[in-house]
View (cartoon, rainbow, N blue to C red):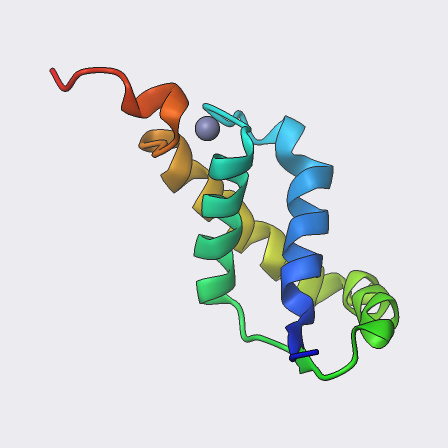
Length: 97
Ligand SMILES: [Zn+2]
């Protein structure tokens, strides 16, 4: 198996926990992936070679109050960007003005 970026799990967990507070224009899988990708581009990755350690490292990040706040800020920013112009099929079908 390859390497795994634990921050993917942390961002995903955080997004799923808070998405109901984020006024998302759409919360389909495509939009959630777009938000996750945008957020991950802003966050220093934390790679591990063995995903069995992932829950431990996730717990460490979730216990880190300052880190958790930073991650939530980045995700909220990404969610706002994606909500302004969703790229999923729920929206892409609409004709341009
Ligand atoms: Zn969508």
